[in-house]
Structure formats: structure tokens, C-alpha cells
Length: 377
Image (cartoon, rainbow, N blue to C red; front, side, top):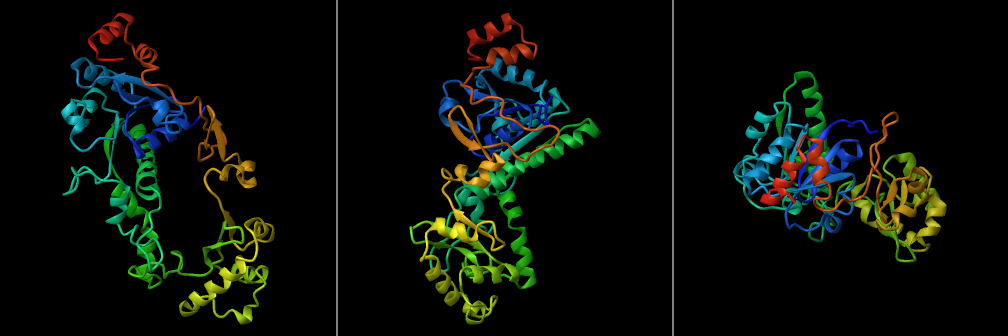
């Protein structure tokens, strides 16, 4: 059983970081109960990965009986994940003040893009917007092109889902000692800003030019920290920052160090990059793997996420698993004594309604009455 065995999390159904956070908590052993909407799209279609390990209860929160049912569930929960815009839960009658009155130990985690306060709090937004105003998007891409979008990994997932889990775990630790719950304001814009910590430090040290996209050591400006095309059209990545790793790169690429110039002379980086590009185009990705993989060059093939599960290193670590025929990342991090696990695949909307409510003290007659009123489904 995972380290969160015995904890109960209620996740109001949303998209992106909320489901990701709930998935990670479920992997770690928490009982995560997703509250789905009546008539909503079936989770087996929309949540093929993030829905794993979760139970599903369908509640109609527009009905008084549905709201009361959720509040009774809250009495038995440790965490509630709110993925709505600020004020929506309050309008539904399930805001933090109401929920904490029912359960003073509850951790009420609010997951939004702009946060609960500020001039943008009520505005719509997506990952691309949150990473835009924190400087993350500006810093990505070549100097002569527009910024390059890093999927929705930085705002939604790293800045949202990961931050959500971090906050929930910290709050649960504090509740264990104080006996009191609290509200967590998890904002993707805050998370994206946190992820940029190192570059603020570099700029303060004079080691980074924030206005020079594609011209710094980690943004594609340096020839020794970049991707290169191979003879077969595939790509490899090089991260030979340290001098000893750089020396090995030149040796294995058969480039005489004395003819290649100074590693950290930025004026020479474009020419040095062209030389490396010409060399890497002479062999296939597989051939370069045979030469450099596993060495201190800091080398890896650039794989699609569908090819990644077959890489020998990922196979050896069981980095990916298959659940209900869907290949997906395995639970992480790894716990030696209380290992995480995926207990089951995605449950359909409302599949667990009766069982969950029964386990939380609802009688059979109550459950039938709630169904008849349309409060649950």
C-alpha cells in the first residue's frame, strides 16, 4: 500500500492539473473519489490515464440534495480538490468556509490559473498565458523565430499539478500536528514563476541575458547543449556543459580540440554548432547511440513519447506500465517500504456511486431516494 493509504481525497472533476494531482495522490495510495457531473463525458473517454486508481461518484450539485450529499462526503474526507474559477464553489454552496465548518481538518486545495486574487483571477486562461506573463515562454525558442511552446508541461503540469500535490502533502503534514485544516491557493502562474527560479539567479550573476532568446547556455544558444539532426532524419541531444564532458564529446565526434576553439566563447558558438551539425548528419541516430550512449558526453536520442517506453533504460526501470491496454508513465516517485501502485484503470462516470456512499454511512433507502430526486446518478 502506498504512503497515503488511509487518506481520502475528493476531486471535483476538471481538466489538466487537477486530474494530474488526483492521479498522483491515488498512485500514492489515497482513496481518490472523483465527483463527476450528471450527463458529462464519460471519464473512460477523457481520462484514460489521469483517471486511473480513482472512484467515480456522479452528483448533481445544482440540486440541494446533491450539495448536501457532497458535504456529508466531505465530513469523511481529508482533502478536496477544487478546479473551478474563484467563487464557483461558493455559489454552489460548497465553498471552503462551508466545507471546513463540516470538517475542520479538511485541506481545501483550490487549483486555478491566475490564483484566487488579483486583476486576472476571474479571467479565462490556459497554460500558454500563465507561462507568458512569468517569462518562461519568452525564453524558449531560437533567436530568429517566435517563442516555442513546451506543450502544456510548464504551466499546467509542472506549475499546476506538481505544485498541487506538493501543497496537499505539506498541508496534510501540518494538519497531523495541528489538527486543523486550511485552504491552499494553488495557481499555475505562481508555479510557472517558481520553475523559473534558476534563470533569475543566472541573470543576477550576469550569466544570462533574459532578452536574448536562443543565445544562452541552456536555451539552444550553446553548441554543446542542443539537439542535432542525424543522417536518418532523427535527432539526438547533447548536454556537454562540464569541460571534461565537452572533451569527451569532441573525442567521440572525432573533432580535434585544438581545432575547435574555446568552449565558452559565445562569439564562436554559431560556427561550432555548424561543425557539430555537419558531423552528426554523417551517421544515423542508432549509430550515434552506439558511440555515445552511456558515456559522460551527456547524450540521449530524442524519442517520441510513443517510442520512449521501448528504450532499454526505461524498460529496465519499468518507467512505463500498461493499464487497460493504454501505455502510460508508472507511478513516481518510488517508495522502498510503501510502494505506489495503480490499483485499477479508469472507472466510468458514477460506477462507484452506490459503493462509496454506502461506505460513508448512507443507507440503502437514502441512496435510492437520492437517485429518485436526481441528486445522484
